[in-house]
Amino acid sequence: MSQLPENVIPEKRSLDKIPNAPSRSEPVGFLLRLAKALHTYGLPAYELENTMNGCAEALGYGIQCMSLPTSINMTILPPDGNPQTFVIRVAPGEVNLDKLRKTTDIAQLVIQGTLSHKDGAERLKVVSDSQSEYSAWMMILAFGVVSACLARIFSGGLSEILVAGIIGLTVGTLAIASRTRPLLEHLLPSVCAFMATLLAIVIDHIWLREITISVVVISGLIVLLPGLSLTIAMAELATQNMVSGTARLTGAATTFIQLAFGSALAVEISKLFALDVYGGSVSKVPLWSVLIAVAIAAIALVPTFEARKKDAGWFLLAALTAYISVYYTSMLLGASLGAFTGAITVGLLAKAATRIFAIPGATIMMPGFIILVPGSVGYRSILALVEKDIVGGLQTAFDVAVIGIALVAGFLISSMVPLPKDRAKDEY
Image: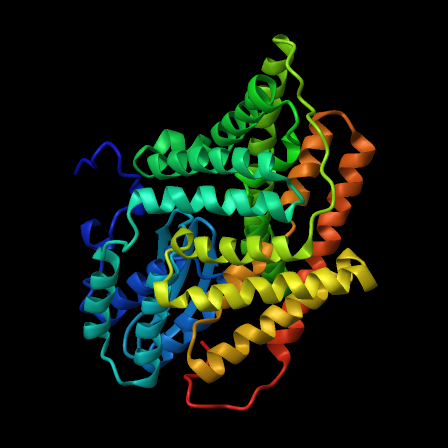
């Protein structure tokens, strides 16, 4: 039996290293590797299954595909042979927009018949082996910048911005370190929440004594909050992908619980040393300063999602569009309808960009939904339950559900709006 290196998780191993796996030069081997790549780079279940159906049909194969957060089940029906069923064990991958764009381009070329499965398989290997154009320190810095900007968006002052940036750098360092340490990867939400909360309380006690601890903790952890997973889970449920949606929803809830456990542990330790665990409060800040923070955060999200540098303008447009639409409609219609309007706006923008400029929809959806998703609200809900504020926790959880449903409804409505075809490729 072959031995894996100590820091390699089995489900992250290449199919080329699995004994007796179909060769990548075969149509079946290409389909298996394409499915695993799309899953690893963050494609939702309903889009992955549609893409696989299109590729299999273009190659003359029938396919039944079911994508789950931790596995892919496929039955492939060759034109002249017996059906073959494959189960691929996969780990939930980190969103990598650049590799996702290249992989979906390969799939589209195969669907159009302009690329053979053999050449497609080789291109998939090149994409898989390519190195990120962002160094580790750039990604850590991006974590810090995003956290600092989110503190301003949550009405934090200069003190909150500075402390949130420090916490973001710490969380970024732990996140990068976890990629080669499986144990830390599994415990990452709890460890980061513990460190973030403890840092905020200690800095407030020793140095400032005036920061709003909840704001800096949520801002520092914002990239880890599974708000996006929560929204994708609801979208999968709405599109009848019940198993995948339920599993992803459970995974998001587990992450929330881990985050809450880490924060609660830090709070209890701080109380033993008679440290103030509540901090101050925030006041309203000028809208122009928040818009600047949204713009800077959008640019910092480019390396966080490992997108192309030239896509920074699209990130900026998506984030500002999402925030402005939610800000003004929420004042008139409330938070839920504000999220609904924001989701429609971002969805239509993504669809138009895909149709007119051949920009992958995920380039718009990811930064836009970071502004829209109720991750921070969900975290507050879990914290309230941990602190035995049952009524407040359940009320906040209900708000999360309503906002999440509004986001999914807005997204689905935007996807049904027809747009005229242009020079761009069809969606897939």
